[in-house]
Length: 352
Image (cartoon, rainbow, N blue to C red; front, side, top):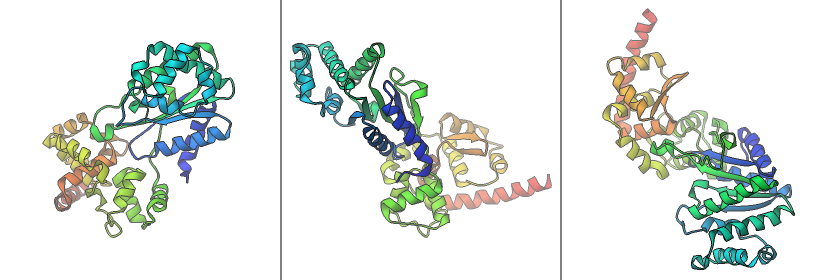
């Protein structure tokens, strides 16, 4: 199933895949559904007669040219046999993982260019790479070489790829390969709505909840389907309001480490804001009248931000992590204390 809010994005990526020389980089947090959207775009492109050479980059196998071998694995032998001898031997050695026999990387690059040139003479060609940053360095250099050559030769293959954004988990800024993708090529993949999240999780797990739990599950995960599916397996049907003190197992360690590395003030500020989700923003801000430094430290650590709605975690899952770090019982005690203070703030606000 394709959630309604993602159909336009699938269509856009499909158009990029079928347009010679076009490029697109689909970006999003882990578990948001990048691979699935790419898969749908590839299916659509093939239905339009495009020859798609695809590979899923490996985060464990970084042997030289591992990605290139994947991209070329379906190329007909006749195109390899037609290459000049030096180019043919370079490409053949690479595909056979005989790096020691690779006499010239230039011959390899020219050989790949010649193969792609032969392919595009027969039909449009699309290079599809799932998780571009995980490509081995040798493959990345070869693909760049091919794209640069076609930039001056005319008709070129299209390139569609994905990239996992880890900043929300690690706090380390994500970087886009600007030598290949321009700002206009980057397509962010948004989170799901409450209804779509519930439908996707139900399709994957068979579980369904009422409106209160669905909304809380969405709030705790930021609409991320993988994280929601993980939490859905933790018997949440009777826990509306408490999902936020749990974390999906796949990211629990890295997020706990990030929260633990914060200063005490920054962690406290983040925890307070996460615990008071939905409270009057003005009153939440007044809680920090005597400790503005905590807000500044949380902002500088990229875990808290100001929005049109007031203070909020940089990402809902970061707020979830702060509450999980504190623990369920201490979170509930903190909420009671904070809401008591909020009550006095609201009374003062009415009086003013």
